[in-house]
Amino acid sequence: MTSIGSIASQAVTSSSTDNNSLMQNYETFLTVLTTQIQHQDPMDPMDSSQFTQQLVQFSSVEQQIKSNEQLENLASMMTSSNALGVLNFVGTTVKVDGAQSYLNDYGSTSYSFTADADGTANISIRNSDGEVVYNASNVSISDGEQTFTWSGTDNSGNRMPKGTYRITFDAETASGNEVNIETDTVGIVTDVDLSSSVPMLTVNGQTIQTSQIKSVGIDTSS
Image (cartoon, rainbow, N blue to C red; front, top):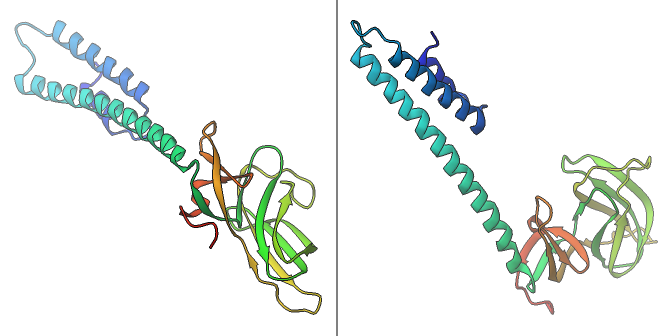
């Protein structure tokens, strides 16, 4: 006959078993326990200590199922709370790390930056692992604020997967002097997109993640 203890152990200790599997083990546990009680020898009934041990195991499985359900509910509540919390950014002024930008499954993405002189730049785009996926040489840049738009493909035209990508600059003037590039930008959050797994904010017409925000409520005149 199937061992009650082995069923309980499998239901409680297996970290890879999801809640549905746990419920199935729980139901099997009940079936086996009931069957043992129904078919025990009246002249030689189940030992009381063994029966008590199985009841304890029964209780442990039941508590594990309830704990899993409570954890799932808590995780769901936290996810909803975090998503709604992002709505508070709408209308606020934020300072954003413009060196990062989020690439969707389609379309391009832009990077805002400010140069302190006219010149040319060698530009590299890196993925989250720091690997260069795109580079461009001798890109003309001008003094002041501007944007660089990346198509979202590598130099061979292959589409890159969605995610966050970082831009780096190596810029100089016509006379060979270094051009300083500032990627931080300031803008007002005008929209929040909650349709994806990661909430996205719209700042100065660009889509960003909350992880790119360096400060909130700063003075735009500074």
